[in-house]
Amino acid sequence: MKKIIMAIIMAASCMTLTACGRATVPAGFVGVKVDLYGDEKGVQQEVVGVGKYWLTWNEEIYQFPTFNQLHVYDQQFNFQTKDSMSVSAKVGVEYYVDQSKVSTVFQTYRKGVEEITQVNIRQNIADALIKDSGKMDIGTLAGEGRSKLLDSVTDAVKKKLDPIGIVIVKLSWTDDLTYPPQVTASINAKIEATQKTLLRENEIAQTKAEAQKAIEAARGEAESTILRAKAEADAIALRGDALRKNPEVLQLEAIGKWNGTLPQYMTSGASTPFIQVK
Image 1 (tube, rainbow, N blue to C red):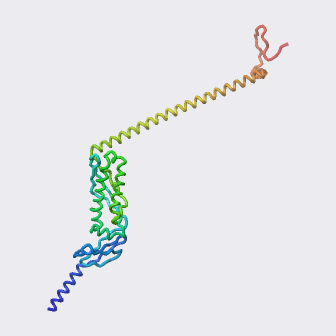
Image 2 (image 1 turned 60 degrees about the horizontal axis):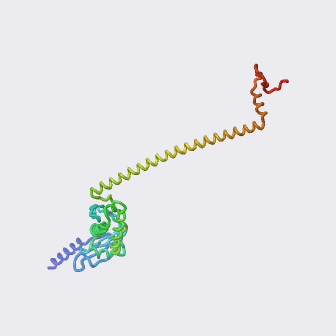
């Protein structure tokens, strides 16, 4: 009988040891150790820091990161604008878990951070997108409303999750928004028209610049011609005034150019050049 009892005890001990395990909480994480079964299932918990821990068959440690996490959702979010246009978008979220509220996070969701990210955070983003996108039309959303929508959704999600302990750093569009085909065609047509307008404006500006350049060149040439003519006129006036005041200058210039030969024929009463013949 004693041998049977000892065998049972040893078997139970082996099962217990086999069921037990060891868990490690790495740097940058905080763990929550909880009971898996019984009346205190998921209620009785202990927050543990970085280290290695032995766990019984009834215990498990959920790990929560206290540094920034960046998660991009593969599945698109679908929502509608005020004018009932369906839009799809891919969203990324950056967040971290407040170390002082790890216990609150677990009490609220009773699951690990991966599941919270995929289910609960995503649902909050989806709800905010549906609510806030219904306040603007497709034209506004396709323009400056895109960033405004993201800002309003971020604020809404932060107000919901930050107090619990999941601190939202930012949300971001990870790809272009997907609009209905007719909206996409309209946007492309508008972009094309804008580009053509800019091209025409550039051509007009270039033509005006070239015309202005030609005008300025002509104005410069005209002013240059006027300045030269004025200079020549002033020079002639000064020369004439000088000659009037000094008639001997003409004689000196004529003498300087004379070859010494007197005219062979002279009319009656004509005077001999430069010299007086007595």
